[in-house]
Image 1 (spheres, one colour):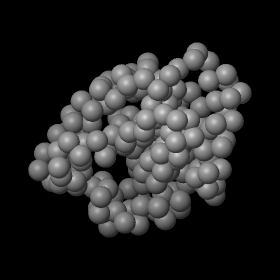
Image 2 (image 1 turned 45 degrees about the horizontal axis):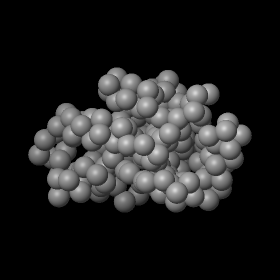
Image 3 (image 1 turned 90 degrees about the horizontal axis):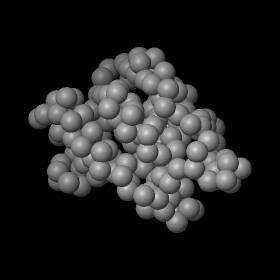
Image 4 (image 1 turned 90 degrees about the vertical axis):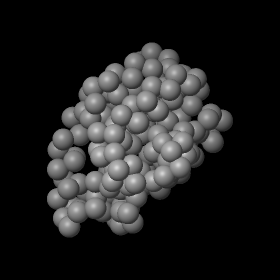
Length: 174
C-alpha cells in the first residue's frame, strides 16, 4: 500500500462514518471534515431542504464541489455521505488522493442508527429496510471498488473500530 496523507471514510448510512471519523481524527491529531456538515454549513440549510428544493441531482452537484475541495486538504480525516460513490468522478477523487476506509454495517444496525431519519432524505419512505437493502445492492460494489481496507462496524463500539483502524495504519507504516 502506498503512503497516503488523508483518510476518507465511505460506507452506508448508519455505519458510523462521522462518529468514527471524528474520533479517528482526534487520535491522529488530524483535521476532521464531514461532507454533509460542510454542505449544510455553507448553504445554511439542511440536506433535506436541498433535496426538496434542488432535488437529488442538485445535492450531488454540491457534494462533488465540496468533495473536490476537501480531498485536496492534506492530513485530514473525511467522512463522506453514503451516496458519494454513485458518481464516477467522486470515486476517482477519493481513490486517487487518500486512503479509502470502507465501514460496513448490517441492515439491522443501519435501521437502529438511522431511526431519526428526518435528516436522511433517501430514507423518508415507508419501507426503510427495503430502501436500505436496495441502496446496499447498488452501492456495495462501488465501495468495494475504491476501498483500500474494510472494517465491519456491526456490534463494535466507536472506540473499538477506531482502535482497529489505528492498528491497521500502524501495521502499514502509515
